[in-house]
Length: 259
Ligand SMILES: Nc1ncnc2c1ncn2[C@@H]1O[C@H](COP(=O)(O)OP(=O)(O)O)[C@@H](O)[C@H]1O
Ligand SMILES: [Mg+2]
Image (tube, rainbow, N blue to C red):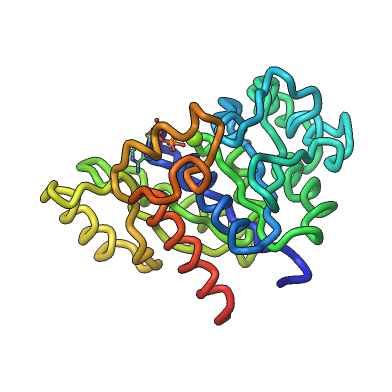
């Protein structure tokens, strides 16, 4: 498709809003549609790594080793249960990277540099960011072309969103010109909850960037899939959650093929 991958950082400094679920299942459906996809687990918790069927205790070389230059990035890339989807796994050592990177040269550019080596092999690189605006997330934003923001449809959803937009703006000005906000995806939506509908309207009113038409419903199958080490495309492709993430992937492919 492309000579160089689109790099998408999935970010929101709030925890538990559906970043990892969105990153994993979007990546799986982009791969299912025939794209070559590389998943980068930038969260030391490694939830995405285990969601993709990789036991991080068995990982010897992961993102941490590549970031500090202890090995080449190609040594860290491994297959997943999904054909066409490769993974750079996180290990718990990554938690220390946030501290170690502080003293390193061009510390905000470590991930961007690591990905330069492999991005030509893929159509998409999906980065799952940790729940903070710290140095790891900064590396994710600097490495990215676009930021995808999952937002849980609940009362405090808008809190922190302005800060995230400001951070992206600051990164664009000083570190990564051209970084774009791709859009917001509403997660864990419950249409019976009036509040959720208000939140959706408020996000549309307050932020100029796109809100994806594909809204992700609250769906227990999405919550179950990680413990089976499978994305929803494999665990239960007929579930509502699966259909929603498939639709999000198609929406993104359609946007990309137009531009
Ligand atoms: N649409 C959904 N329906 C039901 N549970 C969900 C949904 N999205 C995420 N979850 C669950 O909510 C929790 C937080 O989601 P997660 O993707 O890990 O968020 P984050 O990466 O932002 O911390 C997880 O237990 C996940 O399985
Ligand atoms: Mg997460």
